[in-house]
Image (cartoon, rainbow, N blue to C red; front, side, top):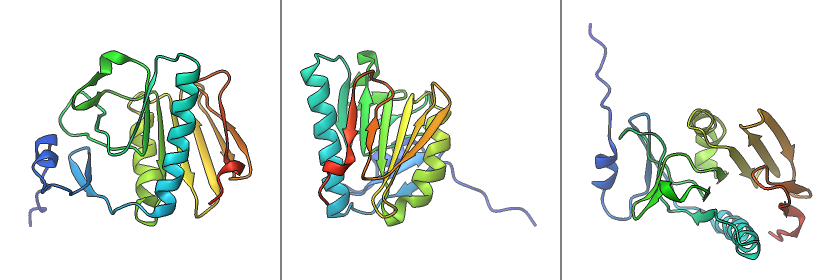
Length: 180
């Protein structure tokens, strides 16, 4: 008996979804996303504001983006993600559609429905797509995991800690200031 055929989707299929439908595409498989919670949005907003303020205050050339923002990870039509926060330092990767290639820094905020995706699927995908740094922020577990793929290190923090950004020499985020 033959195995069932697996349909490989493309970015064209993502753009053909009904308006307002949020989904990501990883290795040709579509993953639908639930709307984020209020706490998720609070954390994303505070992180984005801190990163944006740091870059602006220091005349940085990197650009931060908050979801929904299209990231076309690989040079194929089988991978499209919308990280909660993306920081891109190479302006040649940016166009009107989004980012073509790996952002330098990605932050994902874990929701109940995204746990497997953020901790496993995206961790593997980002590491193999030349993302320099990946943070998993998990408010339910009071945990921040920092993967610095350039240095092959990983560190674990809580919402009581100050977490240093690896792509910058002098930038940290004090999670204890996040009154949630």
